Length: 115
Image (cartoon, rainbow, N blue to C red; front, side, top):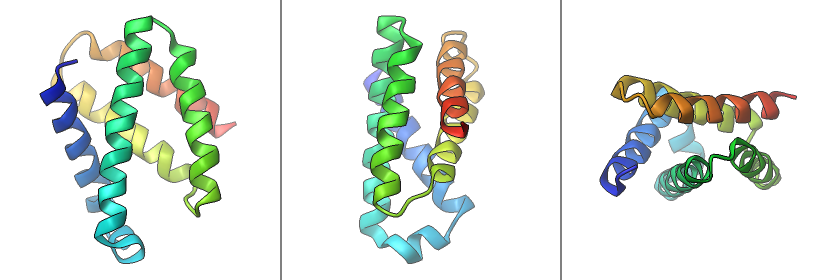
């Protein structure tokens, strides 16, 4: 994944999250939105690493670890799942074949978070 594309994807995902749930801005403010963008950059970096390693479990483990941290800070698992679904949608909109694998890694993480 190109750096500029990952950055754009993180920004689009963050914008979509706040578009779908404007109450997050009220609850967490601009600082929370900046943290969400930072988190999306981390998601992209971890996903890219998992893809380079050809290791789906790497991303699943990241998602489970992150969920533990986020839930301790008042976020719900649903927020992380919704974030991953948004990233999946953005990946598929790009129409690039390689994104199908990223989509499947995100799907496995979502399934693990739902258990």
